[in-house]
Image 1: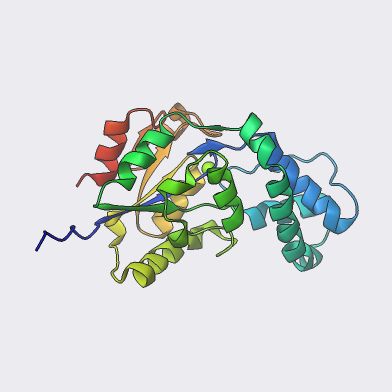
Image 2: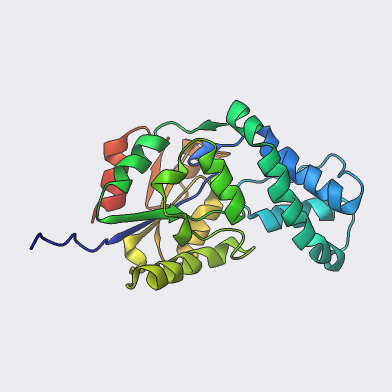
Length: 240
Ligand SMILES: [Mg+2]
């Protein structure tokens, strides 16, 4: 009998935007187009930032910027999110053209995918389809188990997503990870807050809206400028 593979003892939950990829301006434009197609008028200029937020949250903030009341915005939300998936899909070529994989992301994902100790998936505010599309645009979807991911399709509140991911892992894999076996990897203080809400550990990288210096004092378990030092990232995520 060959030795059975050891049971994985690490669940790595990757944020997408600013951590693994930058999708470029098309991803933002898709929100305005989706809102415009449902409401019948385009949003005016607004300064709704996307970093660390869920797709439903971003859509609601854009609707609010158009002086649409919250109850009405929530009524429109399902149609806006459906339109958003279509707009983003139509913009795939723009994402490929103007977006990019962040430094070191591919080698780290590939390396962890071959590590029997590790299960890796996403924890992202993107709708499930949008997360898949952004990763697939750059060939990264093959390295993560998207069936286990927690996304903006599961909950519009990012703070709920770690629990969603852990429950999915337990259901699909038949065993539970302890919170200290789980790492959230992200690029904003909101990723850290989501990790803490789930009792997990958190690695932040300075490749998104916030630089390394800004994140260094955040209280995350580890902070790196980027993912280029594969050995270091793997050591952090698989270490004691
Ligand atoms: Mg992010």
